[in-house]
Amino acid sequence: MVDVAINAMTEWAANGSNANTGGFFAAADACDALLESTRSVVGEFLGADPNGICLGANMTTMTLAFTRAVARTLKPGDRVVGTRLDHEANVSPWRIACELSGAEHVLAPFDPKNGRLDMAEFEKLVNDRTKWVAVTGASNLIGTMPDLKSVITIAHKNGARVFVDAVALAPHKQINIRELGCDVLATSPYKWYGPHAGVMYVEPTLLDSLPIAKVRPAKDTGPRRFETGTPNFEGIAATQAAARFLIEEDMQKLQAIESAVFAPLLEGLLETRGVRVWGPQDLASRAPTVSFTIDSMTPDRVAQELASKKIAVWSGDSYAMEVVAQLGLTESGGVVRAGIARYVDNDDVKNFITAVRGLVSR
Ligand SMILES: Cc1ncc(COP(=O)(O)O)c(C=O)c1O
View (tube, rainbow, N blue to C red):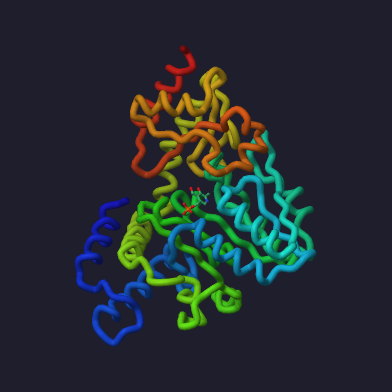
């Protein structure tokens, strides 16, 4: 977490406003004001109408609640199209919604050679029975950023709504929901230097009309109908501070800095004999996240070796189990994933490449 978010969290906890919304006293007013100002700042960060910004526990929990509501609108014969590039948090909830409603759940493949979504196959799957398209903004495993504009155009042409999982996109690229035109977009502030929490934009008329499970006294319209129970105010204060921090940092500048640090990382892996890079092999339309394997070692072993040198990487499928399955790596233990955040610098990348080369030459 960035220090301004940590400070906002502790300041909120200490400021005497630990109440709830909808009261006639100052602490309650402060809670209402915090929700309102956070929707406004996060709306600015995501280029979205603040009236659609819902604040919750994390992306997975919010998505499961959202798709449970969608399930009540689906019927046998309807279709939901997902992709094999997606994290399970944007696959399983839709699968469950389809199981509950009798609708069909299909996944568009990606090209295993370059990690790009196969747009021709995707377009074939979307038809006039398609009610929802669930797509990632960036693969959390191999970094691919699908062409969201084209995906959304194809979906909307067929009368389908679009749910974007932007958890792995939001930390790396400027998002503008108004320009994108998606119906729903989910992110996790803990991926963009904020607290462990979730943010979901839901287009306001959809938000008011969906049969969301809620208790009777809760608001019937607006984000509060989706934000079940008492909000995590201190987390929300920190979410607001993290969003403000990134607005001030400027996502375009941040993206340029990250790309410059990531380029030698990707190049170093591609140039190392005995290392195989999975997914996109270039810098275009991708997050600074890369997956690789070493011929002679399991991914878990590689991660353990790197951890002993104080290098933190993930191994396995990182919940992107469809990606790993399509790459044919399920049985062999998945991949090793390395990535850049704003605090990773050129020296970190040099140390990482040296350490990987040390493992290959053993
Ligand atoms: C692409 C992607 N989607 C969804 C999730 C789940 O997010 P959360 O941890 O907020 O439930 C993750 C978590 O790593 C992710 O990387």
